[in-house]
Length: 160
Image 1 (spheres, one colour):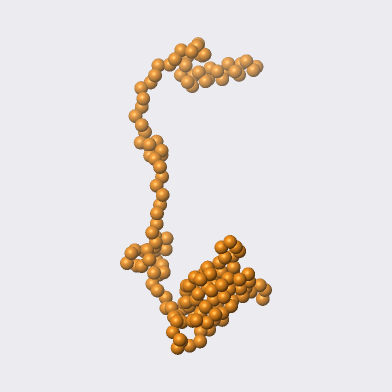
Image 2 (cartoon, rainbow, N blue to C red):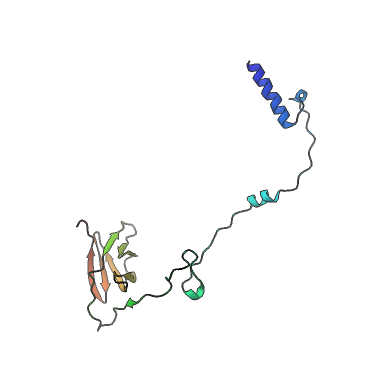
């Protein structure tokens, strides 16, 4: 039985390769076929794939964001400037420390925006305005920020 299967597969292989059954293993080289012209689809598949580069515009004059075309991100929101000495006291009760990352690169998230020590930026308040703060120091369970020239410590809230 084994001999029949081997013989059958040998003949099938010879037929698939276009060889005559009597020439199996005879060592006669097949005549070389003329080379076919290259297939354009195959050439296209072998071409390197270019990398996409997206430049997000900073202003509406530069264009619009391809990922969020209807966004109004480029339009500035009202900003509460606290650098003037005559400014009224700022309510910092809306500032929340969301989290602190561990070393080697410590960052703190205040109202959903990440800060490194010494970094200054705007945070969004619940009423929709923005407040300019500076991250002065990041501790294990708290962060020291500067708002309008006044230092304030925000602590992590563990349980309510």
